[in-house]
Length: 201
Image (cartoon, rainbow, N blue to C red):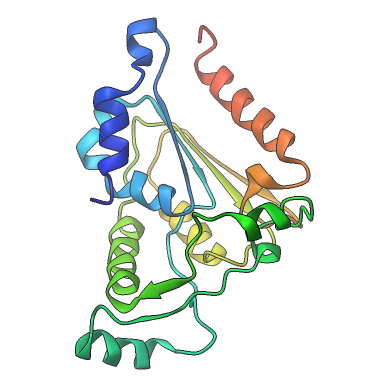
């Protein structure tokens, strides 16, 4: 299920190949984890990969429970939930976005033990996925990351076997680079990276 949305987009969505342009997969946060998780399935259907603050390793997400109590709870009642506190300030330094995030009815406020440990398992899988030869990669990271583990991203990138890889770290910026005060810079960097590799697109 983790990669179902990507599979649907590739199978039924817009088909850039029919227009003669490359397919570039962009995954942010959990979407970055899903992109890496599904690579063995659809690597031959994309021509480039852009990862923005990808979830390579989870930081602890609750201020009330630690990993050991959560593990015990997951064994007793896998469907048990605990509060998830993701403050807008942790996602972006752009204060204009904070009220929009706080009012978003689609954001969730709790997490289950089953989901947490399933995501930890997925992170372990993608952290070990280090062969991207033949697939250009752009990795975008926030220098003031508070949601995912920046150290794990750096470690994964250093172990990465890739013919073409680029890692851009934005100092002073937080998790959602495309919602930051200088979001246009991130867009411009991404477009420039794509244009440099696929000038005809």
